[in-house]
Length: 400
Ligand code: ADP
Image (tube, rainbow, N blue to C red; front, side):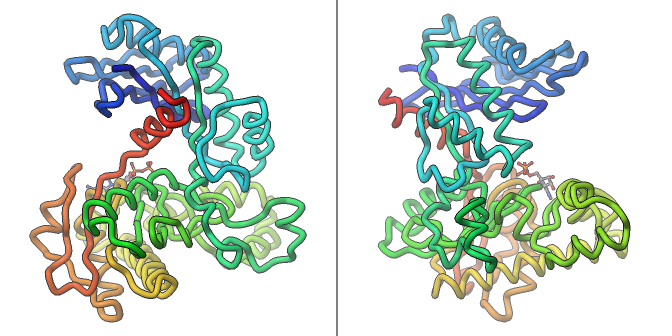
């Protein structure tokens, strides 16, 4: 019995989850928030399952790592640092270099660093997180688990953009997708549990939280995914536009006099459901607005569900036939209202039908079928678990 940790380091936060392996038993999790601030927040789940929170200065990521380690010792979650045998870091962008997770080496580090221009908000903090752990636990093996790796099986015709070849050749500009660890987890559970390891299975996975993406998966391999060069592409999201006519950016730069960078930032952080609803980026607030008859909330829900329905239909076309549709992440796992709205938009064409009772019942971490018996394609909710995938890869690569 040994322990393995999954880490997700952001620019001002560091999430962690510790598992006992190989039992895959989660024993604690927590987060350091507001890193770089005097009023940082450190939260850790004790052995009693209760969350313990402290407000204190968290100068940098090294301080965050120290808090996490001391927190685990003080809460008696571990009695010595030797119990931790491996650490897996979520890394958002692996570019064309990684189709699997990788043990950190100077070469792996250099590649992650070279991809910073593609994911500036993510890859840099991931490396900072890695170094902070390396300093604190120099003898523990660390690996990188890439959000893009699962999508490396896409064919050229699906990952290239219709622009000159030199942009891919010189600058690696192409579709990489994201949420790959989640889509992979969902497809493994779906194919094993619900399709009984059927050969040539075809499924669509919907990872729809505040960031959202869809993937068409053929025989366990990603063949098409909705996010593009970065997580800005694809369907409409909490604060992101999703796919947009590229002339919108040029037009708004010339009309508003604002910079491309400024608008691009807005497309990432202040658009999508937030911009259209003018209420919130949280679908719960928008749902409340919808039921009150708020015009913009209704518009946001309609635009969002239509876009999702269009993607589901186009992925069904790309796959030829579909054995199963999987719903997951914040909205997919918890929101019967939004599931109903999406199905309303594509049921006539695709013959999808929800079982009203099951749809209401399967929320808050429950797993199960939500489609009715006469639905053309069965639909299931599977709560995603990216952390366990990170820990499994850590065990596999470090040969623990
Ligand atoms: P991310 O990991 O991208 O931050 P999550 O997958 O945790 O996102 O999803 C969070 C989002 O899920 C929230 O912002 C909210 O929009 C949505 N959500 C969570 N619970 C519900 C619910 N009961 N009803 C509707 N939407 C929900």
